Amino acid sequence: MIYNKDSKINDYLFFGYTLDRPFDFQRLEDVGLIKLKDYSDDTLISLFKDIMSDCLPDESTFNKCIIPLSGGWDSRLLLGAALNKYPKSKIVAVTYGTPGQLDFELGKLISKECGIKHVEYDLNKEKVSWEKLIDTAKLSPWTYVPDGFYNYRMLDLITENSENSENSENIVLSGFMGDPLTGGHISDSEDYKNALCKFIAKQRKSRTLYLPRNNYAPLSDVCAGDFASKFFDYDEVYDIAIRQVNCIAPIVTFRKNSSPWETKFRVNSNLTMITPFSDLRWASFWSQTGKENKIGQKQYFNLILRLYPELYKLPSKINYGASFDGGKINLLTKKLQSKTKIFLNKISPKYFSKNKAPINYIDFDEAFRKREDFKDVLEFAISYLEEMNVVPWIDINNIREAHEAYKKNHGDALLILVGLAVNLYAESGKG
Image 1 (tube, rainbow, N blue to C red):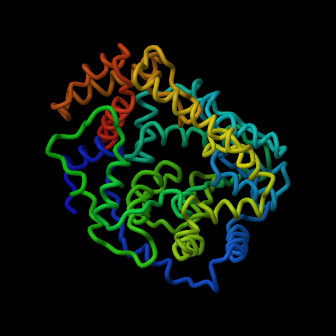
Image 2: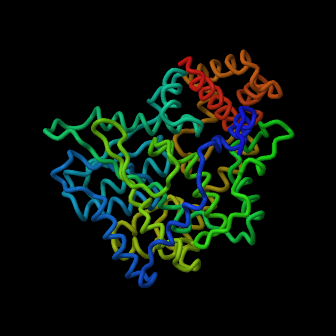
């Protein structure tokens, strides 16, 4: 694919990330190099234990094992493995977000239940700036902003607050690739065109405004064509080879290559990131187990239940803060409450506050209305985009004014425009 600047800008305006990290789709077929005797739950349990044994270093070789702990299942499964191998004094859980969010509150709850040290990173207290975003864009370019900044800042805080030790090395356990491989993103697409249309629709970052040029066709820039994997559904092919490589990996691992099957990355001089779920053996199992085992992540949840039943019983984000054994009425009540809050805020953001529980990071709609640091960053971005005449078809000031007047929530659009300006500025070498 010839990737020119106009394509890059329009891709970013649509996806919130670009598609210029080359990926050989045939690399997905590497999973076929590994054959297992069967794909039963017992085989999965044995495989998981083997992978964790290989990935987790001896406790004498590092100071702390850091686990970014959310309300999801990937980090919880890794916590269970860490607790099985290391003393609790070696493990530190970190949660970031804002009070009231499920990721933030459930991380605290799980840490308390497990009796491990817990560090809160309240993003309400973390100020952003044009300079900080530029620096982070050089580390994780052309993906979601300010996600990379928050993730890298979290790692900085871990290093800054590490206890004095003769061994300054820390490890971070990341759940990268856990959800995509185990059925979290699977659907029922009949062919590659149908799957690609669903992928494109789901990946559109700004839901309130269409930001690219009118003649932009995102399908033309997604170059998988009719590639047919022997092991993955089309939905999984696009998610792994496009979104995980171009969007997620640069945010959570800060790596710039495009191979999905690596498990260890050096982040800085005293921090190593370990991603057990990107082990080729793990990918091989999930690519060849029956599709019925991945629908609803049935086999994955059964793995967690059998290995770590006490962790499985705790509330989760997927259940809107309820637990699996909390009863259907409780789950339906929480789901209805969540959906109602989201609906009311959508039709009248001025009079109905947003449902904080499912939000990632912070409420960006409110940040652009009430936080001076976000207003300042937006002002820098608008000035730069206007000076360089980057998006003359977009009236950014009109979008900002409508947003500030609560006529519509345009935080997603404003965030993309900030990200576009930040990445163009960082790429220019001015920062």
